[in-house]
Image (tube, rainbow, N blue to C red):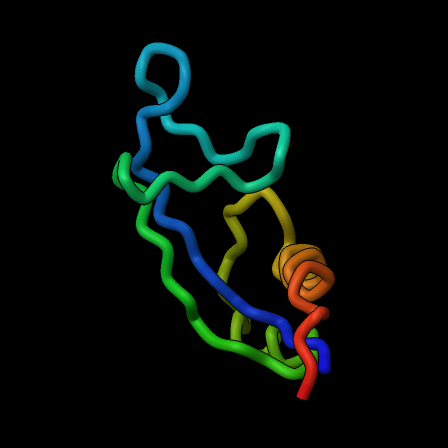
Length: 82
């Protein structure tokens, strides 16, 4: 079974040059909870369409579209079985 986690990162880290916030690095989305980033799991969905329904008309201000982000996460999580 492939699942699509939807999550939000409230970036507050100071990991960049001169203490700036880092959102994305060479590995993808940068997240450091010990440096203030706040990660929230918004839900686990069975299809990309359900993820898009959940996001609804919210403006996207991130670095990856909800569809691309969910697909990338699903690929990493697809080792789970029913």
